[in-house]
Every structure is written in C-alpha cells, then in structure tokens.
Image (spheres, rainbow, N blue to C red):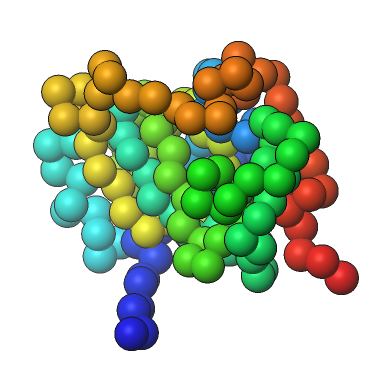
Length: 162
C-alpha cells in the first residue's frame, strides 16, 4: 500500500552534518532549534503555547536504504533494527521529544534538539505526561547502556554504503 506524507515545515538546528550529532535528545540538553512551519499550517499552532514539551515526527531525509540487523550507537553487537532507534529504516521516520521555549508566528523555538539541520517536519504532537509516561516501561537490551546516551555522538555507521 502506498502512503503519501507531506512535510509541514522544516527543522533548523546547529547540526549541518550527522557526524558528531547527539544520538538522542538527552544528549542535546539546551541545544536550540527552530521549527519553521509552512504558512498553510500556522493556524494549527493555536493553543500549543501552554505545553512544555513537544513530540516531533520527522523524515530522516539523509537516510537511504536499511538493514534489518544493525550495530546501534549504544552497543557493539548487532541488534534487530526494530529494537533500535537507528535512522536507516524501511520508513525513515524519526521521533524526538523537545522542550518548547516560545512561539513567534509560525516559528517554534525549541530546546534539546538532536536533529540534523533542514530536516523535513512531518507532525507535532503535544507531550502529555499523563498519556506518555509509563512508569512500568522497560528498555530491553538498552537498559545497561542508557547512561551513555547523554555523551555519545553520531558517527559514520548509518551513512549510505557506497
């Protein structure tokens, strides 16, 4: 089944290349970014200013191809793709939770952004602790590596193979 998705704006960040970027928002604390909405979607920002955090869905536009087994940033052994957050996926869709700083017209100023500059934005959803926090959640194989997510940076491993 074919699915068509349309960008609603662009994510602007200080990261012009994927090498050296934080691998998760927890490694990008206070890194500023902007969500520049396309004009037809500006009215959809109404009432968003009362939320402290946003869930961003975006297109990994630099990602080409995928493997079902990958060596993720937080491990040294291969893992099943769907047990990771690797960017090279059958449907290259990313997800980040960022802090909303302020809204100026159709520009949202955010913090804790871990996305490469000029990434197409697909959707914004408000983060709602009562809906989104699961106190009984487990992190599988990642539980022993979570502390490293704040300091580990992206490298060449998910670039398209030449």
